[in-house]
Image (spheres, rainbow, N blue to C red):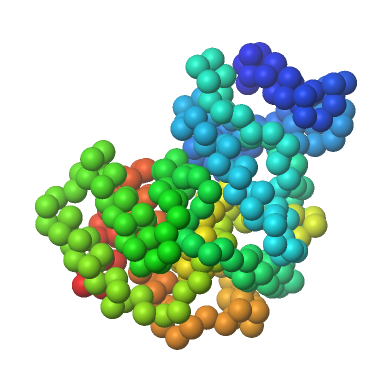
Length: 294
């Protein structure tokens, strides 16, 4: 870490925590593919820090907003407390400073607590679909303009929005574009279940929850008020969550018939997003999902 970044972090700590605070030790952490992450040991305790010098200017402002929203329901989950979030400036990185959550062991009780906590979050509702500001799933901007209609929101502000980004910045043939258009047209026939605007984490794959010494925590959110099943789709990707988790979630907040089929449909958003961010085989995986539903 450069001296200029270290000075910036120290000034944030002194402003938000205590003027006398000193950084005693810093350790870079792995696991992220977009941001730099660090464990800070200070004279006033431990903190977790993320910083990025090449990102959307408000990336961490929006993440902080999501963390603060997730903390509103009394879910029993560990949601990192936000101490500071700054924007990207020409000479300064964007910074997010939160409490440090020490790791702990997993097990059945942790999985059950995670499921029950997520169900509680999903019961926390709003009048419309969307969020207070556009935010980011990874580094991809999400269109969170408030919308009374879930199908319209999912069609145009999630799938259609991503398809336009991919067509602009990557590669999308006219034939592939037509397939996504056909799928969007068919969504009213595919999403016939009863839906309420539920608070969702937005990017809840297995790398965005962790077992801590005080119980399971969820991190790196991209919140919106959406169909709660939309949140559950990515839990089946990249390793997925345990059967204990699923059993406990169904017990706490039973899902409607047909949820498994819709789960596969909702995965499309995340495969499209991964293709937009990383390219590769994600594009074909997304296309296959779309073909399966038209």
